[in-house]
Structures are given as C-alpha cells and as structure tokens.
Image 1 (cartoon, rainbow, N blue to C red):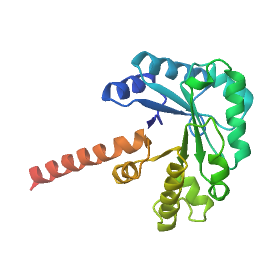
Image 2: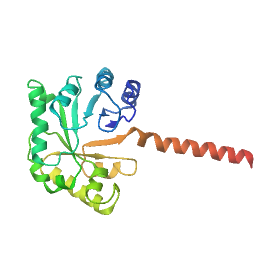
Image 3: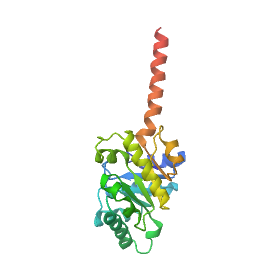
Image 4: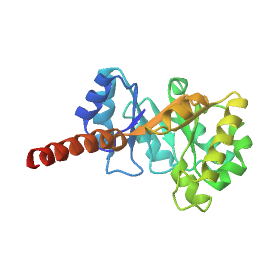
Amino acid sequence: MVNLSFNSPLLVEHLAGLGFDAVMIDCEHTSASVERVEELARAARATGIAAIVRPEKLDDALITRYLDCQIAGLMVPHVDDASAARKMVEIVRYARPDSHKKLVLVAMIESKSAVTQIDEILGVEGIDVFFLARVDLSKSLGFGGDKRHPQVRSTVDGLIARIRASGRQAGAAGDYDQVEDIVAQGVSLVFVGTKALLEPGARSYLDKVAQAHAQRSA
C-alpha cells in the first residue's frame, strides 16, 4: 500500500498501473478534503485497487462521511487501548450494517499504551490488520521519532511476533532498507510513502547528471 502524500487522482491511476494494489488517503497529515477523498476513491475503484482512508481521529460523523465516499477501508490512528479498538469497529458496523464485512479495518499501534495493552487490543474482533507505526511509537517510547533505534526495532519485532502468534495480521512500513526484513517476519500489509519511492530514484538521477557535468568539464 502506498501513502499518496500528493492527493492526485492521476497519481492513483499511475500507481495502479505500476502494480500496487492499494493507496492510503492520509487525512491526518495532508490537506485532503472529503470531496478530494471522494475523487481519489473513485480513481482507485476505476483502476481496480483499494482506497484506504486514514481519518484525522476516531470520530463517528467524520468516519461515516469517508465511508460515504465508497472507500475500501479505514486505517485508524492512535488505537491505544481495547476501548478505542472496539469503538472503531462499532462505528463502521453502525454506519454500514449490511456491508461492513467487505471493508478493511486497520488499527494503528503507535504508543507505549498500545504496546502494554496489545493483548487486549488483539482480542477485539472485526479488525483485519494491526499496523505498527514506528515513528510515533518511537516518540512515545522516548526516542524522538528515531524509528531505527535498537529498542524501537526490538519492540516492533516483538509486536509482529505477538500479532502473528495470536492469529491476526500485522502491518508495517517497508522502505527500501526495511521491506525484505518485515516481509520475512510475516508482515502482510506493507506500507510505503510516495516520497520514499521517489527519493532514491531522484537522488540517483541527479547524481548521474552531476557526474556527467563533472566529466564533461574535466
């Protein structure tokens, strides 16, 4: 799944053509409006991929509006305890009593509180994936957003193992230097940002341009 970062229907279509099977429309950290969510979800349906929305917060009215855009699922941030996990399931089931089973529900595990209560959270039925958000988790653990800190890595590895041992599905970000490792651990939902996809190619290209100019000037 790709975090769009840039809320363009054309980008959705292009990512679908490249072979990705889902996009995440980020309403927590980008400027996407409900109207734009509707447009992006329409582009995803037209190209045969899933549109998953990350809402700003766990709010009944807000989530219902996103569901009205015919999205394929939700990726809810800050699911810090079993109560929040149950609430997200209840909101979706109330809003979509006849079709909630067709929606993908992803609970984001991104705090020290969620880590300590992970077994209770995993006991909530109706959630498809438990996604480990390394950056926010590292902040909550006191490591200032360093997602590669050894203790953060150890915590995430332990959570993946516990999620899988419970018979549930895990999700995590997989940049170029991480994706092989997390897939090997059994992560089923692999997440990458558009910027993370663009930057390595852009840097490599600009390096080649700089080298070519240097060689010509030599």
